[in-house]
Length: 365
Image (cartoon, rainbow, N blue to C red; front, top):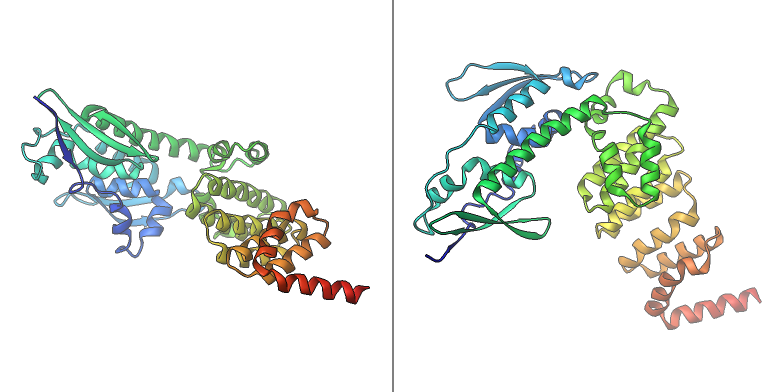
């Protein structure tokens, strides 16, 4: 019997969590406190969070009040225990329904794969594309990170269960040493080597607790050198995320770094990094303001002005780009550093630029 190919367009749930977020006013706050994936897990498990008692100094002491089912009484648990209960619920075995007979039987397809796994897959970047069904087994074609892979249905289910368990382990490990300032030097070394994934491993657990801690009196009262070290770590993490293609996270982290830096010496460098993140993401118009702020906060024009010129060029503002390049050269940048941008300006402005240069030369002569 030949395999039947069943497209999964009708049951694929890509983006379901984000769409729900558009209708929940407290969505971002719940994600920040509970954890984005764990909030998604709660929705998949049918758990409704009714209240949070947040401990800003010790996030793990946060208490979650929740209802797990229509007829169940409300329960309370610490945040780590709540996460463990969620994962326990999701790791229980979900029965596999019989293979669908018709391509259009959406309910049968959902029961065969498992509604839980249909919802969990997108939270880990897994997109289910199609089923290959024969009398012996069901294979699932999935897409992740732009590549397709074929798995058995059992492999898909067990693989997602492993990812759920690993998420609990990852958060637990992050909580045990969430803010270890000694990691900043190691992250800086990794960044210099271009090992951005290592930076993410070292500092990836920082943003959520630091966003909360920043709003506490204890956070506001930290010594300037400690705040600067925290800002530096966040700056390294934000740039690493940008280079790994995680633009929204990069911008959030760099903005948090700016808040920790305040009016300190690192502010200019962080604004420069934010501008670079916008450039990397193809948003040159939004990059202009951070680059200008970087200059205001004392970041060297030799470093910032070529980047600002690049942003102006991509917006078609050639005269402004020219002014930035001249400022960079005056600050010590070499002509080789700005040669590519200068050539673009010369091609765009043509004869008017040549006449202007001749006028300047005559005036100086």
